[in-house]
Length: 529
Image 1 (cartoon, helix red, strand yellow):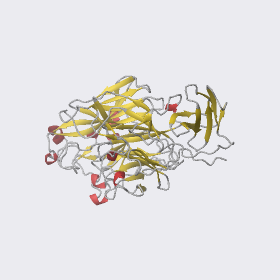
Image 2: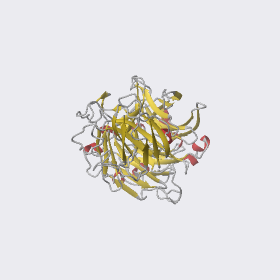
Image 3: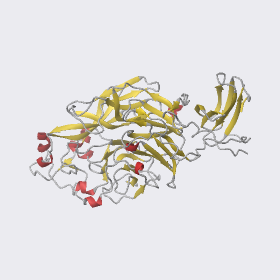
Image 4: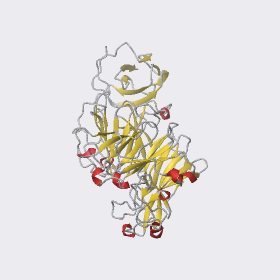
């Protein structure tokens, strides 16, 4: 019987200041984590031990702009901007982007699209669609005259323009925008009764109140910071933090229909004051980020169907993850009475609450992976609301930190962390051998072998021959992440493999004892001579 402990982390947060701070054996969802910190130009894929397994490099003249996605074919969607881009541009605000790229696993550029001119600018987030197209978020600049002509109260125009929003669907192969939706087509206002959009927002919650304002006339009126798609409903959810709401709109429309009444909001939640159906005391969301369907593929009748989550940044008692059951049968009733759940870090430390950026991902094993972005602090909670994994991005304003250093708030700001499971198709036949720890002077034993006794005979994987000189045959009965360590605990290789027989070449390994183990804690000793 095997009683040893493989990949058991016994460290505490006080021992590590960056990288992996804590991990409970066998409880974290096994996979690889995608990160694009705001002060660097490279995208990193790290394992749950904090070791870099792949990097997409870019020039130092670029910065995130801000989202990044790994597609199941291994291609990367990356949003970026020039590092010199700033307030001198016609459109500028927090979260500004400029270019979206599609790159191969090997970092070859396949497609790119840039939008940063006097009228439009990409920002914050994009969303890949099943048909290969990509939804883009874009600010749409409106002049003072255009805003007043639509009924904006001049007292709410602190500058000579305001920023509305557009959703653009880009076809990379055609390099064309093939669908559009514009906030400007769906307004209501009760300031100027000479305008055709005059009316009361409490009677038309499906329309957007042009004169709702919590930010003293800031041009960045809405500041949409995330976009997500539901293929079952063919709908889009948008996080609108300056309204403290998320909105749901239809995608199953032509561009013409999207500009008409059929393109009005299907659903909104978070702040009834935004459509004059309550006061600020009724507010449920506080500058939230990362609105997404928990399971966008859930069908009507399934438990997660219609559930939307957000990272609720500025809750007075500390950031929460809110889950809203928006619909039970595919239809909506606009209002704040939807069933809701609120989840918070059990100890609620300061670094779990971020006033900007941040994300919350619901994992297949029921855990929640959260990135408190201004702290670069990620933590994973199980369904019992217990923390099972913690990580701190080892960056300070672009400088890689050494273990023992602690970044200041904002110095390692990270838009999101996304974990992809071991069986994610993008990893098939890819080299996922750990290249190095991200941080300098790492604590290499922190996530290594602590104690190993003889393995059991009942096997989910076997090795033959053993001892070996040259090729060893590894046979698996299920998808597995195989981590290979030396007898001293140094990680030398990780392999994400499907069931079946696989050959590992040990001819370049130094003679000695090695341990091959799975995330389930099953270990095999291998003697190389």
